[in-house]
Length: 255
Image 1 (tube, rainbow, N blue to C red):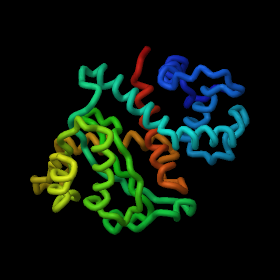
Image 2 (spheres, rainbow, N blue to C red):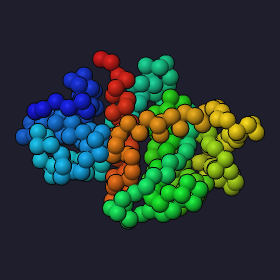
Image 3 (tube, rainbow, N blue to C red):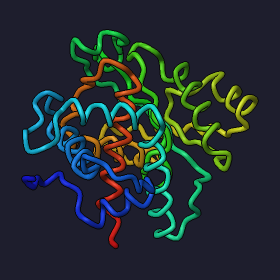
């Protein structure tokens, strides 16, 4: 098979294979399936436009859909994130999160759920994420862009609370002020700490903690599939974000 820059190295594939624990004899090489998915993520091509050097696009999409639904991508994200946190002398389970959203345009295929973000002047969806203090993805929720951050964050915090009982504090920007702070405390036992700009200067100033999640969004810019939300379903959009983080983290692991 032709080699592409987006292909997994042998050590990176071994990391995934160790997590999957797949010992079945298969007709198709799962590494080639993952390579095809990461090629699509990196280049932004359509499923039907995958190069012929990969397995048939129908087969690649079948596995993508299967892994999306059975939680494989989230599992890979969780375990690889734990490895990196341990490497950085941190507990595998984080105790602090940073929340923010990113509004992105959709294509016609994304008409199923989209809206107009009046603040950003964007018609599309929001990628609502929580990251740890290293900027690694914890949870992602995709929803229509017209939903205000303080309202949509309830679902994000609920998902965070279900998956990370260790998290006690979440940092946020001014868009999360109001009753959400009380709801987060009462319903999820989370301290939602809002960090506001106190300087009156017009020039850019880095704010504590908030820059971490903003940097994560900038990392996603390396993947053309995330330049817009091309997906018909929101869970597919969430899977693409998880895959981007998996690829980013694999690049940090040296075996």
